[in-house]
Amino acid sequence: MTNIINTKRINQITTFLKSLNIKSKRFSEIIETQNISVIQDFNQAFIHSSEDKIINYEKLEFFGDAVLRLAASNFIEKKYPQLSVGERSELRAQIVSDEWLTKLGRKIEIDKLIIKGPKALGDENSKNTIIGEATEALIGAVYKCFNSIQEINLWLDNIWEEDSEQFLKAPYKYKSKTVLQEWCQSKGFDLPVYKIMEVSKKNGDLKRFSCDIFIEGLKESSAFGKSHKQAETNAARVLIEKFITKGKI
Image 1 (tube, rainbow, N blue to C red):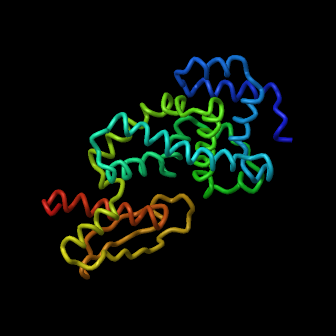
Image 2 (image 1 turned 60 degrees about the vertical axis):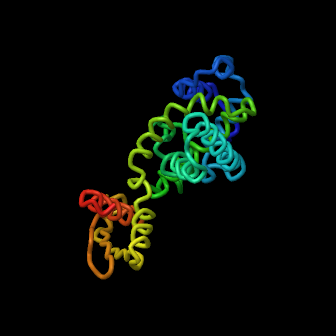
């Protein structure tokens, strides 16, 4: 049963938690003493529903979603007090996004801890989604240790600072479709038209889909992506960069 933790699993989880390098004395003490109830919470954060329908990460993921948004708001308030409410919302949306969670999960190699059932093990398309969900559940589990966001901020603030600086320097790279739509509206143009074509049947192919963008009937840019959404985003980014180079934005 997945709710019974053997010594090997306890050591695996303990080693992983140490690798997060959360600079908190009370968090370190919990890890060192291998508090079994706490370890069980963390173990649950790594169990996918395909493995266990009852004991899995879904409740911790739901909890982690709220915790993540609160901790991110706390970070933005301390680091960027000059930002308007709208700018804060845009920044927060980036640093709590599913894509950001998946990137963090890959960075900390959470996939090595995740326990999946046979169905999920064979599904490459869901791999990134599961990594992001488990990472959010991990955040919920860290919070549950102390009912405090302190450890979340101690862990994530430095990561958020680096990612926030990248976003604030070039926000269009992260919300290119929105920027393009707003540009069209400011010029009195119709909304951009995205035309997608599947050029490969291979899952995970970075050039599986191509996207052409038309503005006022004229083809303005093209790009590839491994999904419809990514192809559209990439094509919009290419076009925004072209407009910036030509001084249109």
